[in-house]
Every structure is written in structure tokens, then in C-alpha cells.
Length: 256
Image (cartoon, rainbow, N blue to C red; front, side):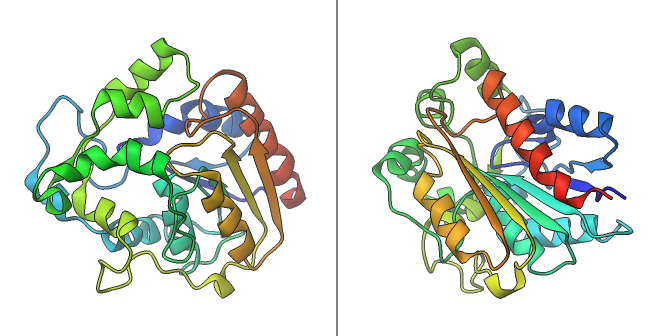
């Protein structure tokens, strides 16, 4: 029996990130679940609710634990960017069959300083109170740091679909020691199932060093893949086809 697949989207993103991968794996007989994190199913043209700004990593993690708790069998947990970080936090709490981490964001023990990340994200932190307010990245740094290498028409369409996200979550992800609860700490001894880690060599948001550090931390068997020339956004054209095939090949170990 094929394990269910749970896809976790990233910061400013929605389950639409995985639309084509979801269709592919459903056609191959998998049950695929791609939940929207709290408030991420709102029309991006609407003003954000103030309470979104103070949601925490723990709020997102508890939501996902509850969603996975509805399944009858342990799933493969698949996360992109912030979703990769959340996948690790959640997998340490729930039965799971394996992990797939795509351009994963850092946990407390896999942070890698990078000027590229600062250039991409730093502008958000120039406004007083950003850590307790809903956040949205401007188009120019998004195109440079999130969608580098993506054709302009695709990149701008993806940017237009961005939703608001939590300033508190961004602070907990990026400022070491800020969270008194250790928001992004992971007990890697619990992550002892097979894992697939994929990152682009030109990722300017969650730089490849984070994925390398993560692969070293995971306690199970790890298949580590770097896609030459790819940036942070893996969901377009030949890059997405390659990612889909890497996942499909890796999932073969769970058949039967």
C-alpha cells in the first residue's frame, strides 16, 4: 500500500505550489493532502487580519500535527522552504514513513549565514514592529532572491499569488534565540526514517548550506540531491519535472 503524501507549503505561499506534483502523484495512486496553513487560504488582494502577525511556528506545527492525525497510516511528509522546516518539526512529533525536504528553511541547529538571504529578506526588517505584524515581500527582492532563474512571466505570476504571512514566524525562523520556547528546535534522533533532500545550487533564500547541514543531522538514510543552476523556486518547467522524478524514484522504496 502506498503511503499518503502530505505537502507543506512555504512562507507567503499556498498549496497551489504543489498543484502539478499533486496531480502527478494522485494519478500514480497516492493519496495526497496539501493543507493551507492558517490564514493562507485568503484572497491575497484582501488586507491581512492583524492576528496573523502574531501566529507562531508552534501554531503552524500544531495545525499540521492535527491534520496528519486524521490519517490512518503514517505519511511521507514533504515540505518546501518554511514547509521543509515545519516538516522536520512535525515529523519529530508524529508517526511518519519518510521525509522529503525541498529548499528547506533552517531549524535552530542548521542555520547558515548568507548575504544572499540578507539581500532577499532584509528589507522586511527595516520597518518597526515587523516581528508582530503580517508581512509581505516587495516584488524586486522576491524576483531576485526567490524566483532567480525563473522566466519573468512565471515569476511575476507566482509573486502575484503571494499571500500575507506572520511576522512572528519570520522572526522565529531568522533570529537565533528570539523564541523563548525554542520554536525551531528539532530532536533529530526522532528523524530516523528515510529522507530525500533537494536544493538548487543557486538558491538565494534558503542557501544550499542549510540543506547540506540538514542532511548531516537527519538520523535515517538520506538521499541528497543538488540541482545545478536552480534557484529557490523548484516548481516550473524542466526543474519541476526533475524534482517530480527524483521524488517518484525515491518513493519506489515504499511500494509493495
